[in-house]
Structures are given as C-alpha cells and as structure tokens.
Length: 340
Ligand code: DAH
Image: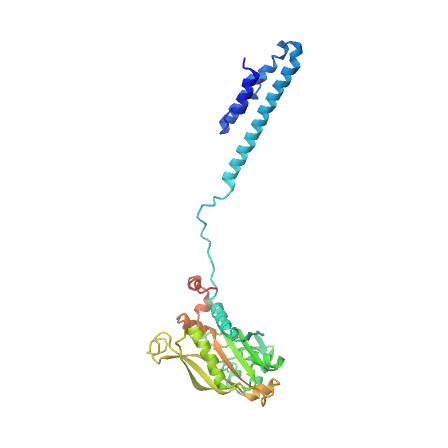
C-alpha cells in the first residue's frame, strides 16, 4: 500500500489541465472506489493507539483532494465562460452606419459661424406670423403683390395669420424688443405658395441679417458682405452690387459673386455671365425703423437676406432644389465629409 506521504504528493502534483483529467482526479482520490477511500477501511487493522492519528491524516488528505478538485473545477468553469462571453477585442468591428448632417443644416451653421465671428448674434422667431411682422411693419404697401394669395399661405380661420414668406419678420421682432446697437442674423424656414420645380419649392430656408447703429453706411454693408462672400466661397471671390427694389430697404441692391467655378470666364453655372446672384440687401428704410420704435434721425442700418438652398446648390453644385427635401440617403450621405 502507498504511504500517506506518497498519496499527498500525488494529490498535490496531479496535472489537471482539462475536464478529463479533472474527472480522473476525482476517480483517483474522491470516489468510493479510490485508493484513498479504501484506506479508510484499513483503520480497524491499525494498532488502537495509532488509529486516531491515522484517521486524522486520512481526513486531511481527503479534504486536500476535495479542495483541489473544487478549485480546479471553478477555474475551468470560469475559463469556459469567459471564452464564450467576452468579446475578442482584436476582432474587426461591425460596420455601423454613420449618419451625416443634412446639407441645409451644414450651410446654416456655416453662414451662422461666419457672422458670429464678427459679432452678429443668431435669433429665431415663429414660422406662423401675423401681417404686421411680415408685411406692414416692413413698409409693404396695402396692395403689394407679395400679400397676394398667389404667394402667401394664409390661415383660413384668420386673414391676419400667415406662414412667413421671409425671415425679414425677425428684423421687426428684434427692433421692437431692442434699441440699437443691433447686430443679428436670423436663420429660419419660410413658406411660399409656389409650384415645386427644380428651381423653386414651397418651403425653403433663409438667413436674414440686420445691423442698426449710429452712422452705419452703405460702405459698411458692402465690406461686411465681401467678407462673408470670401469666407464662404474663397478669398479670390469678387462681389458686385446691382440696384434693386425691396419695400423695406432704400437704396436696395442684389449682390452677385464672381463665378467661383469658372473664375468669371463664363460657364453653365453662371449662364456664361461670370456672375451668380446670392442675396438681396439694402439700407433699412427709415419708415421701417420708425415702425419698430427706433429713431431714424439718430440711427441707420443695413439688412440682407439670403436663401440657404440656393447657397447650398451653388456651393455643392447641385441643380435640383427638390433633392434637399426628398431626403434620399444616397444623396445625403455625400455630405458626410462636410459634416462637422
Ligand atoms: N426678404 C427678401 C426675400 O425674401 C430678402 C431680403 C432682401 C432681405 C433685402 C433683406 C434685404 O433684409 O435687405 O426675398
């Protein structure tokens, strides 16, 4: 029969590397038929004075074997569990689709950023407006065609309530609340009762600008808009102001930029003129200042309004405004690189 010491050494050194070895260990040392268990049957043949000692040693061995068995079993279970449940951190990641910002939002943010950098603050206001803020305060004559049902969506229940046709209404809202100096830009959605074509839509976006203070001149306006055009379309861009008419500005102008595609040579984008129109502008009409409670003898100002869709179409050379409202992901995904 093996000595107690031999069995102890076997228990301690038994290699248990897999489930089979663990089972073998159990059979060798813990099962009823194992050598160790059968030694318990030998106790009665030991001299009585040694029995207690012998029994204690056997128990000690049995406990040792039991303990090793439990330890190894727990370790193996933990290892099996971690292999199946914990991610392999070296595995390539799944292809998660990443969204892009809508081109209209990208352009809005760009315009906003350019003006915020020179001290303009963005303000917003309601899409659903009243006649005063959209037309009357802005010096539109009673019979001005822009009030016509052809252009404006009126709310049926109330003839005074309408969807704003331009963000110029925010000039009025700002000046009614605040005395000069005023330097705001007003991004927003506008609505017009127009047939939807590749060039026009019944919903689009504008950014309005307003600067009112003492001694604001046409030259200030020109320089501010040149700065804007060059930051938006590149440092070599030139601007040109053409006389125009808006009820709320006097004098009024339309601003063109030199065609940044052909550099002024003439191409399809500029219809071979070398220039593309980008915004309307002018010196705020004194009537408008007075309508909003601002002293037109003391203060002067300039205003401008630009269409975001038009700006986006120019900058990203797309030729159909409807693309911006259809939201086809194949179109939108192309703006991933421009998303910031
Ligand atoms: N409100 C004009 C429009 O919707 C754009 C505009 C022109 C705004 C001249 C202005 C301006 O502030 O001065 O067509």
